[in-house]
Image (tube, rainbow, N blue to C red):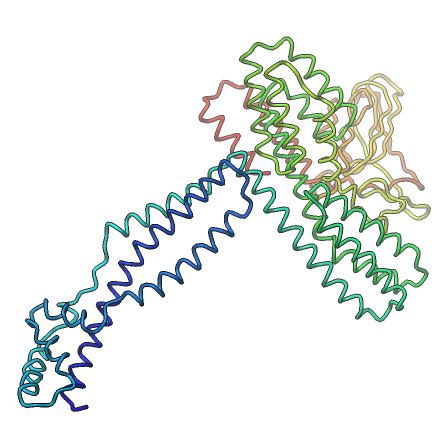
Length: 535
């Protein structure tokens, strides 16, 4: 091939790149528009029917659709003859297509034609004459459909919420199956276990894996994991060798520790969000406080009172109560609690309430928040309260402090930040309270029982001497204060308080004050949003 032919073909190749790029881009925009329209149709469909796999199917369609668009685009892109005609239309006046047809000819006329073409193409500016132009109308349509797809994913209908729950459960189920498989492999590497012990553990894990795969929802999965945990604890308990016990304990922690912590944290968040929503409605103030207290009797009484008060409420009050319960349902993640709140929201409109169902759901969430289903016995033996520790010698169990109050009486309280104390009224106006740190004593000799929930602790400064400002009143001139020491008792760290408890009480108090105030609604909303953000 002579130099004339090479230069002409080289020019056509350069022009072809720009022309094909423009064609594939614009063809792709049109094809992507229809592809996204199909995806949008699936997303809209998922709003009305439960379609857990909608995102996977949409991703599959999008991925293979793009590959198909590229393949078809290259296949349909202009060949050299079409490229030559397009370039000729930009000012070469059919010189390029003529030279292309004569590319294999070498006579004088053909050579003269090619030389003339070469002369013109040297002055032909490809970038200027063959600009890559994108169809802006199609581009805007594509961007519009993308926005509609994203907007659709934010709409949460009943079907969409149910699909989200199923997807989350499927992911958790899949993760646990992988964890069990990995742990089975790790068991083989544990030298501290005998062959029989390894087989025993592998059988427990294999049975659990089958049950995990067969579980239909999160509730069933939780039960399967609890059974697996109990079996592993039993296997650990039956071992005499300390190394074997430690190996089984590590296996159990690897499988369940992270899940149990996440479950406990989610339950605590649900309790906080629930009470924050309920306290906004005056009719459910007592219920909110009962939930925070963790007292089953108070909870039962609050629900009974709420149910009995429904018959005296107006339709507008019932409607407001229903909306509050609906908001509370939307704020929590636990499926059973959410369902119970939603049912309660609907039933109160008719003046009815299934208090037993709601009570059970709340108590189950409280149980998860306390970590009752996953507490290790190790390290907790001999201790019923956080920070409580019995001592038989030295200064262990010493509880001391002073408190002034009007009236006679005895009071005792224990828990995080509370000490044992007593007061003997010897003269009018006398009283004493024991305990280092935060003493919730009263003139009647009673102390509040602070919830013993585990969680992050914060330290209250300036209370170590027991002179608690929460005790009001002044000592009579003829009175005295007493310090009571105990050699064998509870050593309670009175300066340590549960952070979540403090925040919860502080938030409830602030929201209650806001609701009862005459502040503008906009300012009330700002205050409520601030305290909700603390949780």
